[in-house]
Image 1 (cartoon, one colour):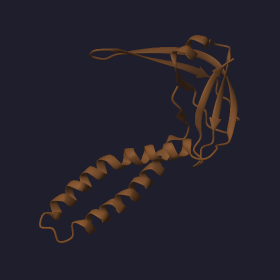
Image 2 (cartoon, rainbow, N blue to C red):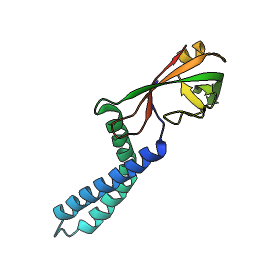
Image 3 (cartoon, rainbow, N blue to C red):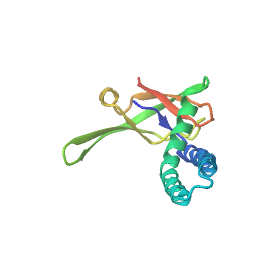
Length: 154
């Protein structure tokens, strides 16, 4: 299972801030490099369009990677009761995609916001059943954005 971020708003906000910083730095470098060029204004416009389209995604991915892989995050184990499981099938033109979910009972006290439903791999879905418990291994992250590192069904 790929890791899942628990605070997507903060992740996206920091990603956009990183993208704005990269945009300013790269655009300034392009302006300095093309100073005095007869076609510089065209290249500046093209560069701005490409940077505006690509940098928000790149900035968000950079923040996500830094949060997960830099430093040694503090880990917390959160136990939740499984109230149900769901399997959704979506048909595409040439293939069928399967999505597996665990549904949890909402608990008031929690150090991190845990979603009521969590997408998991098929093997974990097969071992889960209503009434069993799931242990969510949550890491705080280098930037303080919590993310689910691992899920185990007990």
